[in-house]
Length: 86
Image 1 (cartoon, one colour):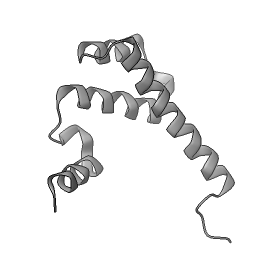
Image 2 (cartoon, one colour; image 1 turned 180 degrees about the vertical axis):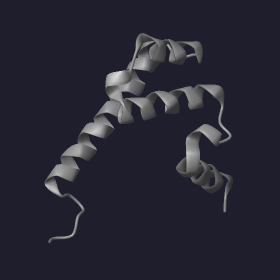
Image 3 (cartoon, one colour; image 1 turned 135 degrees about the vertical axis):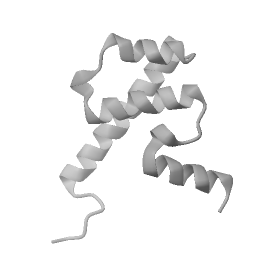
Image 4 (tube, one colour; image 1 turned 60 degrees about the horizontal axis):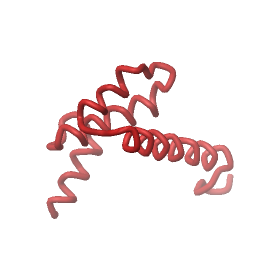
């Protein structure tokens, strides 16, 4: 197992306990909340990204990539992409 394999396993188990730089942890906290409870996002969530060193472009990119990933997965799920025929 490589270091990357170990990190991937840590992230799958619980990103909050993985050995990550603060900026990466802030980014993952933000996208997990965006995925699981988008209605609960506040300005404070964006400010946490800024405090971790992300500028307007970074915040925008993180938000758009996570939102698009969530969107396309929901489309794929709705259309049964990758699911065996019933």
